[in-house]
Image 1: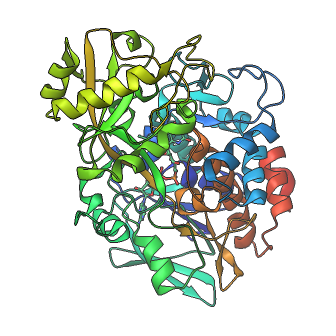
Image 2: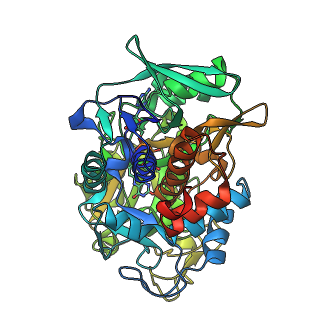
Length: 483
Ligand SMILES: Cc1cc2nc3c(=O)[nH]c(=O)nc-3n(C[C@H](O)[C@H](O)[C@H](O)COP(=O)(O)OP(=O)(O)OC[C@H]3O[C@@H](n4cnc5c(N)ncnc54)[C@H](O)[C@@H]3O)c2cc1C
């Protein structure tokens, strides 16, 4: 059977594109590099999606208006974002949940814990794996042909127009195509090149762990940038990077390797020195910068240190931390110089100005006269037992991608392709130049996956991709928008 729309990738962005294209009546084929049991990419590891809403909505409390979402994004990216595409993502996040439900996704109220996200993020019942499974089931019902073990390694593109993809020597032609094959975070050699060697002669990326799938090797990203000259966005060293349990596996450790007690204690490097404000902001707005901070430390390792006052205030890691009844014993147990560690901890403890501790607010507990400062939740680390967790940089996803616009078209020399579109991590850098705020990866993938799917369906019927029509389709139902 001929293919109208070829979707390359098998995670959230690809599935959203495939579902929308199929709903629009296109004959869709989806190529997933992974075998069936590993399908779904990083999306299988997710838990939630950040959603704008002007009033309480099912699982979301209060309101999270467009402007607040935008300001949050502006703050974490330091302005390295495209406002038009960011606002498009934000608005699309307010209307996508009914569509998601129609394809079998269920939502649940968030669990309490260190993430202050009951207002901003809608959690998937059963997590990302359940979401991905629901989308695959729905795609099969809609007649999408799905192929696993199908890594695309070459694309035929003529004058900016997609012609065919190659999988293990087989040529697959289609009228339009959506690229949704993730970033290059699983490609350790590329990470090594991108990060280079530091002033200490270390190759920092050699110590990185990959939080998600091993299948996002960036093969198509590199092919599009180097061989086809597609317009690029982003810096290859920018990524969503979390400080994760140093004992995590190289790939697919997922969320259970997170260490979420940073803001409740202090973090020291291998030289037993603090290096950043642990209480700068709420953890969901800061957790994704700590991987990068640890990457800049000697040996790319650090230690999150807490005392017993912190216990019960954060989601406990799967593996227990190192425990000791005194701070010198703790330093010894984690192999740090005891004198330096004690100097650091004593200086921090003496600098704490404890007001009214409240981990749900940006409270008034801060340090005075120590560098770096801890600006919120600063309390002395003085109550045994004490705990330490060794952390390493955990790469979630990279931000180098393909430059796009509100039609999700891939661009060559600033000219949009008539039939080649991009979604998800492969273009997230248009919205995320750096930094991260929890749940926005799925907001971007869902918005652009759906737009790319509609526009690929249009393109396969020789219509021009239009952002307005695509938005109408993803807001009001694709059947009304496609002629
Ligand atoms: C542990 C973890 C937790 C996360 N939690 C959240 C969260 O709660 N909320 C949130 O918003 N974001 C979260 N993220 C980020 C989120 O996973 C991504 O932003 C989002 O899933 C990206 O979707 P995607 O479809 O672009 O990529 P992916 O889901 O990674 O899909 C890429 C797909 O492309 C396939 N592929 C790769 N190369 C090829 C090729 N050459 N040919 C064919 N197929 C190919 C892969 O096998 C994979 O199926 C998390 C990520 C991780 C790792």
